[in-house]
Length: 520
Image 1 (cartoon, one colour):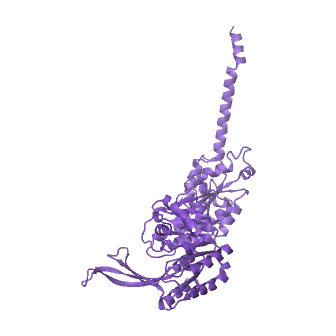
Image 2: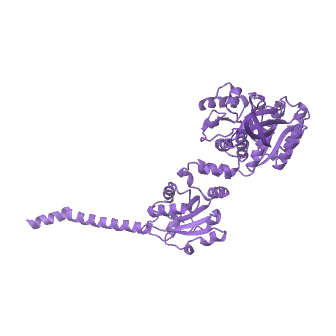
Image 3: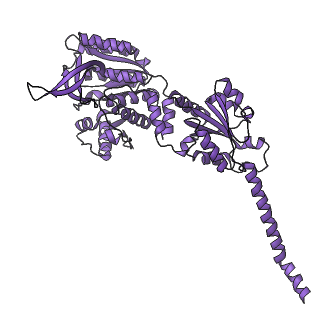
């Protein structure tokens, strides 16, 4: 499955997303929790530095940008210094903030976290102080926001609603926005507020509530995956959704469609350092994938990976596509996922080279997989982090002028045998007489070849050297070539057939009768 998801990441492209929701500014105060105050039994934090980060819907936008997609933010700020700081940060990150409006009646939402460390160990959050108001925006501001964005709706491939319950995501704003998106065929995903009120989200494509938010919205306590399936179906009914993602932290995601079909998308265990921002990262990954047209199950699987990488960080950190690809490449590889066509393999090679992996390429018929092949493939794999084995098609083998009965095994069987080897990362079949076209398409870092070839004799050498790659012969195990093995087998077959014919002649009824008459 990880190979399938690598391909999905490489097909994400650069969709443009609209994020609607509460902008929050996060202030971190870092320090050393060095002693207890003499004034009261409280920890004294010796401040060392401060840091401002985007939070809420602005953080979702930041994470979308980190995933190499384009994003516009529709939100509000106060007429204060924190609002101006937030806009400067949005501008620095190249996030379109032209639809961020000022509401003088409220402050910019600010969360101040005090992060303390002791004896140079990992810092932990000691206290959070919030400055905010939660009353709903007035109808005049809702109309102003809609007028800002509705004329440009066709510019977006997906819309994300990030509701933190600070008053922006009212029914008056969301209902016409979702209706217009439905009419235009633009998917809308909502990360709902924890209050459980869901009328404003009706008609959205999907929602991404956690266990608590799901329970408050449906009345179904979500303890198990089966609970999540029941609650997810209810969410689809209550909000007229196409499908729902119920996020279940260490238990992954439950995907439930409106027709009741459901699927559990598990996640692998992680070392949890800080859960802050994990939900935003899940939302961002789903949004980018949705904008690229990925299927719901793949959206959930990639969201699991992105959210898992986020909880391994301290504080809110934007996760990149390269980090997601690296994580996917570390997971278990199934043999059937290794056999790819050329366009898919190009995307995989690009993904691996982006993450700094050195790609090794070799080619041959591999008609009869033997110890010599295994030895040289293991040696070839040591030349980099990814080994591609390209095999001649059946027609290509026949054109090479080998024996009339070659190949002994067809190309599908040969591909499956090679894919079963742990050292092999990918197998591709080519129909040409040489691997030149493949080398031009894939541009591997290293071309290797087993056997008695010198570097100058390796076919495709000039292609690889022309773009700056390396060519290296691998040698061979003495007496172990497919031609030699086939010849020995044929000689053995001929001997066996000769002995069988002789035995048959000696023991045939005609011979036996002749001997009997002679003896008489």
